Image (cartoon, rainbow, N blue to C red):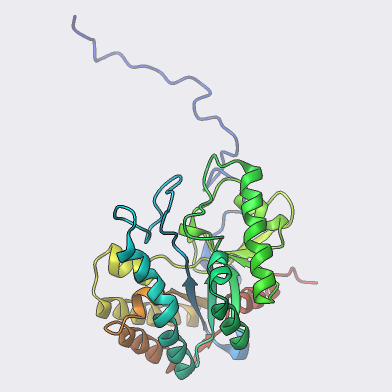
Length: 319
């Protein structure tokens, strides 16, 4: 029996009617705005570009469950995947210290995104971070403890509380920033974070500057931590060379400085992993990138929290 393809099925009248349907997006987490239309921001001492170097200190369990998916950068081979488990551990035992020497050499103020389980297991890291007094943000409990759509809200709230309470105690810091493992969230994650004293989070990468983010209680600030310049994304995902990563960082620095000179302050966000760039054949490229950026007098190296604070001060309504 042939089918008459000339007949058209009309959509029901309410097909395009649904909650929060609006110009630009389908939610009410933040108002729609174009970056070029916002009031320009000035960093301290009239600097034009804020450098945010974010260092994830991560713990990948050997017996990962992979619920609801295998976390990027995690175990990939049959249990026990000692090859990848020990490589991730290399970053916290060796690569990190190469990072610290580079930061101190080039006057870079890093921010550390820390898995709580890591500092529970390795007290020397907690002592080291306390001695340096660099800002710590919570990177969840560990890399296999994911936040995801459909997760039981009570279970997720317990996970957030466990992550923050323990990290605050071990670090001696208030901990007001958050980066989800794999940058993955449930629909409830921002609301839960706000209820547990988080002021800013780094999961949404849809901007080059911070912006206000609404929750069911206290508003958050979204701090966009670029994925496009992340070392793991460029080198392992895009299969570019270390030299290419360094070139891309320099290009981004130059472009953002030029844009900032015309439109107001910008942020250069670099997410770099000690287990990757901390390798002896790669650390030189991180040093090259930091050397290039540090020669620019218009650059202000700061923690994520300081960048957030200076941005927020300039968002207050006049009067």
